[in-house]
Length: 199
Length: 410
Image (spheres, rainbow over the protein chains, first blue to last red):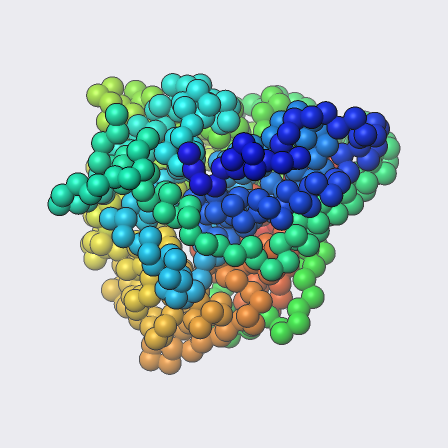
């Protein structure tokens, strides 16, 4: 399970699934309450990290998070009643990421200044990935999203198909293509390293 | 069961997912801002709805019936009246944005460069502009469901009519067909599309069609996938593109041969006849050498600490000491740096505009005048060295798109 995903007990009020009987009907019914701001405070950084894995750079990650939270805000009460807000935000981020309207812009937007990256100890720590992170950057957004959902979120192909709104066979095809591309440029270690995290 | 690659992938994703990324200062306010802007837009749309309905009825009565007329294949049309987009004028002395800019929308900044077009083709399919065919005509792609495009259309802004140009279907026997990029001149449109052949191999198909109408013709099929890549039509004779080993060309006569362009090995096509050693789409911290593949002339762009993103013949854009910076060629190596608030995404549009972020706003930096103009986050942006095209849903009419063409800015 990804460290980013909220533990069941950590979801608190936004995800408790209890119908909000106090929610007024009609206009303004989706106005946020304090729980929205609380949810933002608790989960925004984790979702930012998720956006970083999804998009590959902190600027697009912030853009995804902002857009997803903006959409959550206008649908807050409805989302609270029906589902887990974090799942809603994550799904929204994935769908935004693969949206063609956004994609055409994002493929031309590389807003990450390189200099801070070099100074960032945390990013330097993860640089030893035999080029996989760089290879992920050149995958089409849908293929990258499939890999993130499968290998970062531990989602099944059926779940991924639901999230992306495609057939299961499409998920498998996209994953196969993405792995083939990565494999073509991937240099395996001389000796397999001990793997702590298993799938 | 996972193999070594999958295990490496899991490790890589999780390590990057554990990286500490501070929540950007003001993100909460930016989210609130997005919500407020959308509410204003909704209110404006609702209040203008009645007036728009009346206007729509009048427009149909007066002559808007053409919008609903089914698209006709171009074969019966007269020869092409398409005017080639003029080559962008060179910017000799770029101007940095002011320290405290006033950022208005592109509509308000350059109203004469804004056009309105239907968001759907007569058949009901969504359309996206993918090129400029002249002052009065756009090349648009019709959505075939999901992210696929199914046809190319020409939209006449003055007559408000669509006409069909080409079907975006595989000419060869390919499955999983996905058109990627388009190139046009005054006669032809060409594109590259990825697919899988009968043997299960990934291939890229290059196809061309006459803008005046006619059959799509297969120019060549090459192994591998290129994705969205720079394509240029040259002298009505060649389609030039960046292949896996450098700049290559395919004759428009359609003999199926792809050959390397002399002097272009290992280079990346920027805009014909220029190619450079800047092959990584993420940029490079090394000196960039642009080469004119016709004359052999070379220009070197180099500044210590510069991370270069993109280059047009006279300037490179990148980041120097945390500031978006334009860098001129040696020996002078002039630099023009924007104030710190501006984060350049690193792409030129039409040789005159630089795509950038100002706070949470998407902006275009006009390097000729130093002006910044914002565009909607939902916009489709087509930026290359010939074109700067931004299209977004018309807030006043959801059936329309507003289109900004940088070439129309005077």
